[in-house]
Each structure stands twice: as structure tokens, then as C-alpha cells.
Amino acid sequence: MNHFEQLGLAPALLQAIEKMGFEKPTPIQEASIPVLLDTGRDVLGLAQTGTGKTAAFGLPLLQLLQTENKHTQALVVCPTRELCNQISRDLSAFSSFMPGIEIAAVYGGSSMDKQIQSLRRGAQIIVATPGRLMDLMSRRAVKLEQVSMVVLDEADEMLNMGFEEDVEHILSFTPAGKRVCLFSATMPPEIRRIAKKYMTDPLEVAVGKENAGNENIEHEYAVVNSRDKYAALKRVLDYTGDHFYGIIFCTTKMETQDISDKLIKDGYNADCLHGDLSQQQREKVMNRFRHKAVRIMLATDVAARGIDVSGLTHVIHYHLPDAIENYTHRSGRTARAGRTGISFTLLNVREAYRLKEIEKKANIRFKRIQIPAAREVLDRKLLTFTQTIASQDVDESMFSQEHFDNMEVLMAMDKGEIIKKILSLELKRFAADYLNAPDLNAGDKAAASVEQADGSSTRIFVSVGKKDGFETMNFKDWVAEVSGVKKKFLHVYVKGVYSFVDASAADVPALLETLNKQEVDGRVVRAEVTARAADQGERKFKGKSRGNFGQDREREGGWKKQPWSGGKKSSGSGNFSGKRDFAQTGFKKKKY
Ligand code: ADP
Ligand code: MG
Image (cartoon, rainbow, N blue to C red; front, side):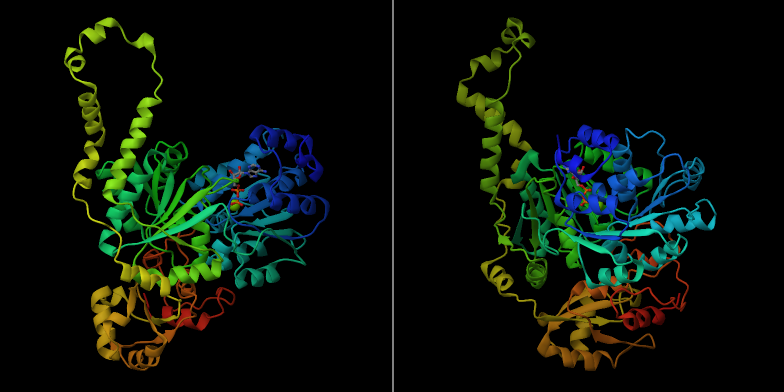
């Protein structure tokens, strides 16, 4: 007897659930499944990552299908290909005792022909990323006239990635009377807005606090100098040892690749996942990670989004994410399905205010820890190695007297000598790193300034960036020079065609006044204060672009490479943060 039965699920689904080992429904499942089964209402489901949202919509969706009808009846739209694969895999598993159900996964970066074929066979369920689905729609390979239910999964991320217009377009090709269900891990105001726009009197099913941290996650940080970050990362990995199984989040594809290359070179079992890899490569990496053949995965936010790998012990933030929601999403990769996990940030002082901001907005508390000293790492290594030896099972049949006879050299040594030799062998790889290794914690002064940071700095958007020949250093010099604000009071982030300057409120008027008077390459510079939620400035620039449908859009650098129809006016609805003028002007300045 299990509680899933009480939710009104059909025997075939209950059988599959049992086979999958789900014992009882999660809160979001308990709340959504009956509503989806018994009422015709739209559902707005809000629950943290890892709480079983896929089954919350997937099980009722399957039960409501008319199996004998081969037309597409249900459409699940999600932001990334990984997620697309994951959801269709989950749906297949749920429907393993329901013959005659066809599910087509439709996403960019892999063969269009194959997907068309699978659609031709008659898929009752399509799981799709927006871009590829639109491509297939325009080729008339999908028919949505009989769709009775649309699920927008990870809706917050679809907004972040600029898919709103695409989703709107897709919805406009589905029947007016369909149900729309929206699932999301976070509830920024934009989600409420689109819910209002696309859903009819939705029933809101919210489980847990909005943006509440998963209580099974411990949030930790250590303050390090930028130049020590990599060494600190290695030390944390060494200290954690072989049971480490986690994702290390980087900001850019390049950094992801770079750190992963370095780790591999330094003898770690690492790999990386980012948008520059081919679909095939990504799947290979994911599989190896899923099966723990690789235990350290470097990833960008976008690439790791929605990945459901269970049992991760750690999430490491090599840098804090630009968007606070992304912190929640990242750390939600660990501590899934009731387990515990650690979300650890390698923080340098300039990132301090973000930490405070995340504490406030995501309602979590960070605990400061120290990067272990070299000595501690060695001690711990020795201890675990000793324990491993002590607990090792021995298969006597493997050894014969002859073996021992041939080991005279060893037999002649005393115990202490043998032990030292064995341990030296084990620790060889670390010896070079750990002899005379420095303390990697930033000084107390730095740490104190992190603790005092209160998020009161102000972020200014400036309409010039790398495209204009700026890099962090010369941009900071330039800003300091024109504004008269001392460099040490400025933090700058130089992006593709724009940049951010973080400064204390007192310096903002001077910055705005002077920067707005500048010209770069004959172009008038525009500077304005962004909403302090540092993510918003960023997010605005990620939408809109067309032309690489279905490709994951990476955080940095990705969009500026996309073909851009210069000056094209976007139609109506595409901005999420209500600051459209901001984003548009930013774009219009740059005609490609
Ligand atoms: P979300 O979409 O909310 O992030 P998922 O649907 O991906 O979460 O589910 C997270 C993990 O929990 C998956 O591995 C899934 O198989 C597992 N899971 C889902 N529902 C249950 C349940 N009722 N009991 C046990 N495990 C579950
Ligand atoms: Mg999900």
C-alpha cells in the first residue's frame, strides 16, 4: 500500500512508480497530482529543485492521455536539451507499463531528421526546447491542434534565457481550450506576470517557502585571494577525497574548460560541460558523470541547468553566479531527494556583497570555513588511507606461499619501514603540492570586510565593453580617470558590449554624470543605475536573440556571437524585467 494510490493514479502508473522505488509522493506531487487529475484547472507549481516536479506533472499528464489517439496531446516545453532528455526519460519510465505511448524529445544541436521521423510515428507527448520546436513547427513536422495540455517546466529559467517570445509563439499554435501548467523553482515577479498572461485562473501550488533554501544544504564559503582560487579548489578536493561527487560552477565556457583542463593535468578525475560541446560530447560527459566514471564536473549555469544527478555531495561555486536565482538552482543540484549536501563558495573579497545579497534574498545563512592547511590535508589523507587498508577485505585464495617467498625484500623490513614506504607511495602525488604549501585563506582583514559587506553598493550599467577594446584593468583605469573616483572603490565587470561598475552610493552621482558625457569611438556612452538585484542587468541581455534556436545560451559571450538583425524591433512582449527601454537601447547602439 503506498500513498500514491490515494492520489487517484491508475494501476499502470502505480506499478511504474513502485518499480522506480518511489515510496511516497513528495509534497509537490501530493498537491498537484489530484488537482491535475480531478479538475480541469491550470496549475502553477512552485517548489525547490529536486522535489519531484517532473512526476508532479508527468504522472497526471500520462494518465490523461488518450492512448489510442496518436495525435500530439501533451507538450512539455523546457529550457535545455539536457532537461529535455531527462524529462522524456522520466516520462518513458513512468509509462513503462502503458503500451502504445510515444514520446518525442525535440531539442537543438542534434539531428533534425531523426526528430522528424520520431514525430511522424505519432508522438502523443512532445518534450521540447523552444527553438527547435519552432523550427519543426515551421517545417510542419509538428501538429499541435489536438494539444490539450502544455507544461512549461523550469519556467523561471526559460525567462532567464529569453525564451518568452518563443513560448508565446508556440502557445499561439495550440488550441484555446488547452490547460497550461507552469512549474518553477523560483518565483520572480516575471513568473507571476506570465502566469497571468498565459494561464486561466491557475491554482497555485507552492511548496515550501518561496526561494527557500533546501534545508538539507549547508552553505559554506571561504575567503581567498583571486590568485589562490585554483589552489584552494584543489585543496578542498584533496581534503574531501574520493567521496567527492559534485559540480563546480564557473562563469564562462572558457573558465569551465580551463579549470577542467588544469584539474585533469593535475591528476583529478574531472570533465566539463558547456555549450560549445557538440550534443554527442555533452551526452557522453553526462553519462560518464551520471555513472560516476567522472566525479568532478565543471559546468556553466546553463549547461548544468535541470540536470538531475542524484547523490551529489558538493556544489562548488568557483564564482558566485550573477543571478541570485542561479545560486538556488546551482545549490539545488545537491541534497536531492532528502539527502544532504554542501554548497561551497570560493569567495574573493570583491564578491562579498553578493554573498550578503544572496543571504538576504534566498533566505539562507552562509557559514565561513577555512581552507584546510596543507598539514591537515595530509593528515586526513593518511588517516583515510590507513582506514582503507585496515578495512580492506583479503581474498586468501589470491595468494600462495610462493608469493611470499618472492617478497623477501619486503619480508626483511620492519613494520614501520613498510608502512612509511606504502604511505609515501600513496602520497607521492600530493607531496609536491603540500610540502611548504602556503595558507590559502585570505587575511583576516579581507574576511572581516566580507562579513561587514551589506550589499549596499550600487551597480551601474555602462554601454561599452570588450567590443570597444576594454578589459578589466583599462576599463577601471578609464572609469577612475573620468569620474575622479578612486580605483580601489570601484569593482568593474567588463562584458561583451556593456560593462558594470559597482560603487558605493556616495560615488554614484559623480560616476553617472561623468560617464554619460563620454564618447567611445564616436558613440555616446550611456551609464545608468541598474536595479540592485545584480542579476537583472544581466538577464536583460540574454533574451531576444534569434538564430540559434535550441542552442543553450551561455551566460557570457554566447549571445554576442549570435547573428543579430541589427535594430530589429522586438515585438511587444519580450522583456521580463519591465526595463525594456534599457535593454533595447543597449542593443540598438550596437548594430551588427
Ligand atoms: P525537480 O524537477 O523538482 O527539480 P525532479 O523531478 O527532477 O525534481 O526529481 C528529483 C529526483 O527525485 C529525481 O531523481 C526523481 O527520480 C526523484 N523523485 C521524484 N519523486 C520522488 C518520490 N516520490 N520518491 C522518491 N524519489 C523521487
Ligand atoms: Mg525539474
